[in-house]
Image (cartoon, rainbow, N blue to C red; front, side, top):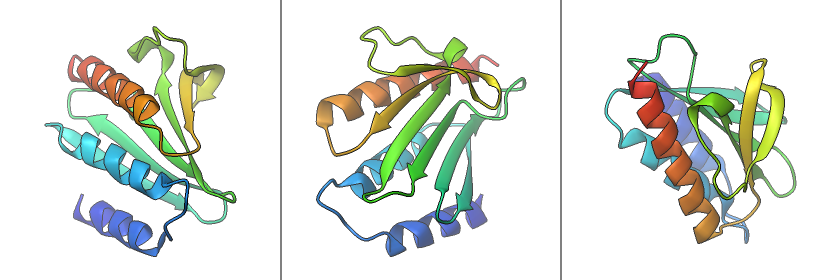
Length: 137
């Protein structure tokens, strides 16, 4: 995982700050994930398209991840945080249901276009929920 962390740190270092503060949001979500026990991260850069941070848990056997945090290369950059629909609930319906949206399976995705504390906390709660689901296999 050391290589992944180095690639992430390099990406973050090269990401200029912007008024939307999406770099700050990405770091917060990354740190939130890294605080969880048994987590393995992968980072898949596709320059000029997306930069994808994916998290799995050592107990999760039937899926390659439980969350995908994509940095969408746009002006300005924004985030799309996607979960398998079966791993979370969206009680306030703040996400978008995307049929076949995550590696061919139904997903719930949350777009974050700017720093919004309430939205970030809501997505962090979904991260916790997906993490809990992942720990159960």
